[in-house]
Image (cartoon, rainbow, N blue to C red):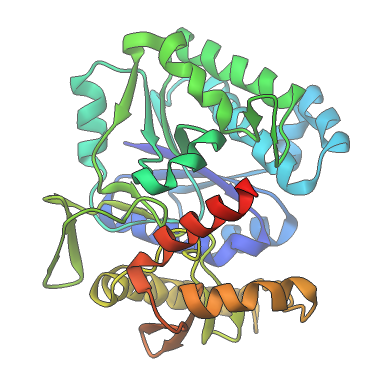
Length: 354
């Protein structure tokens, strides 16, 4: 049995349930451990999660970690959530020695294929820890200052060296874990840059482009669209996509794509990745409406202030908002499309130098 873990609150409940359904479909023996960050998430998962979804509440985790609970008072909510990234898998591996390997996945990820090759790569390399790089294209290389590796997918074997690595990461995050760049640190993520030196051959950096494909690294690759919404990237099947910052703005028809800074996906690729994900979100939304009538996506209010009008020209020209009609997403922009990210990055570089 493969064990996975994630965490989320009410705001990501629909996405978290969609993640779980996709994982169960592509790894039928999977067991998912969810750290529920509020009462709504816990109550819903007790109702719809099923027998292979194991629920732990935040209060349970905090009860066994006084230092973590103390950190809650000196950072924002999102920064506290970042702090949980090492604490949660470390707590599981220590408490559950029968878990021989735990795979952490962000709640806004979605499986489109079997993760078997991820574990095969780890076993072939005889590695104890697996990470994926951000794999930024050259024109987005400046984003690497936030970290070479993405926290969205991490695999940890349950052995002393890995527990020591997780404990060290936990100590770092308890000491400093803020949503800003400062002294070579950024949130929970930048700390991973030191792992290649610390872990040596125990670490594998998975290079498969179909695993943790994301808005920031899809560009500059070769794609094939096969029947049944099957997508291949550089000859490899897309196994896991990271739908970061993809959320509804108004109703379920106006969406923030999460792609403004990176370039807008071509039409066919967008429909074959985001279309099936929207359908999965719709099913999860309907399922949760059976638990609580009227349950819906958590939305941030659209504020028509200075920031809205300042970014509106960028969104209109470079394309950050999508209109959903049926299962299709139309890019709300004037032009540029897939080149938008490169042009925007160049313009920002020019203006930041002034």
